[in-house]
Image 1 (cartoon, rainbow, N blue to C red):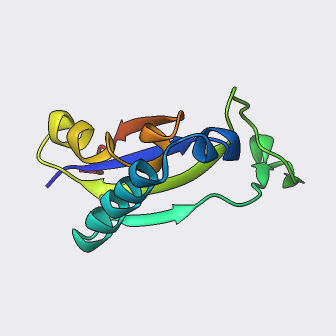
Image 2 (spheres, rainbow, N blue to C red):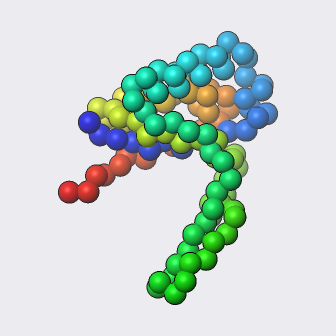
Length: 110
């Protein structure tokens, strides 16, 4: 079955402004994804690694990309196609609580 990486963006203000019953339902959707076998995790502080032309590893304690909302978490899910992936993540906390979820299809090596 195809795999998809999802990236959830959201902040505490958006989460806190969402009614509790909707937040609870969104967390239940995360639980359902986990029970289906999804790998789900909340984002912590990132590390950026560079090694241009194998000249030496450079490490920075910061994200490479920036966005209007902070990265809140990641998941790897399985779905039949993009439509099913959209359906599965449209009810997770970042989608419901004034955030955003990106879905990236994974092309597995041949």
